[in-house]
Length: 194
Image (cartoon, rainbow, N blue to C red; front, side):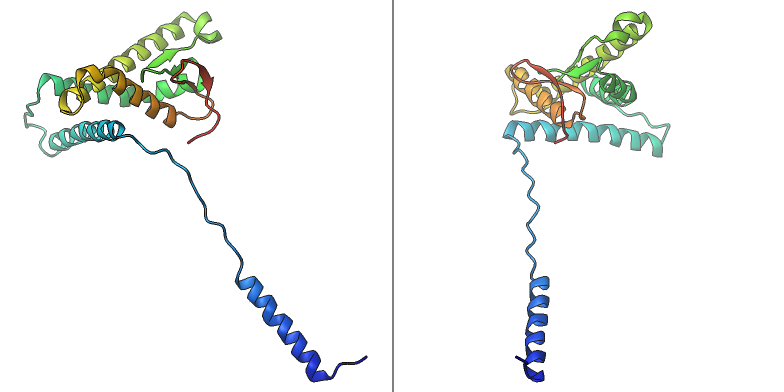
């Protein structure tokens, strides 16, 4: 059976329109990312920490515009500013220690040494790790104390809560392959970034 030419053209046209319609109306699934919500305490701590870090930049900015100016800050504020600067200075070493697996983020928001072969067999390396981890932990504790001191809604009795928030933030920002300690005390190497 032969179709009339106009019918064949009409059928081809219908299929062409249908094909274009189907190609044009493809279904795209939206990308969905699930992120954990921060608690009110986490938001307060992050806000206060951001404020403290901003103070470092403001002081540096004032010094760069007028090097002869004297800036008056309290001893507590000076201690936390020094702690933030120390952390920046030691960051490369700490990142290397984390990559090599000799340190990890513990459940108190501090670094903890996780001895490996190099740490056990190289006294100079061991001394360096212990010194820098000690400095880093002291700096972190200084910052945590300052956050408690300047935030009226956080009490000194909330020290453990502040440590838990810092520990959570450190776990979340850890890179794959780095040691992290869960709230239940178990250690494991992080598998993927959040």
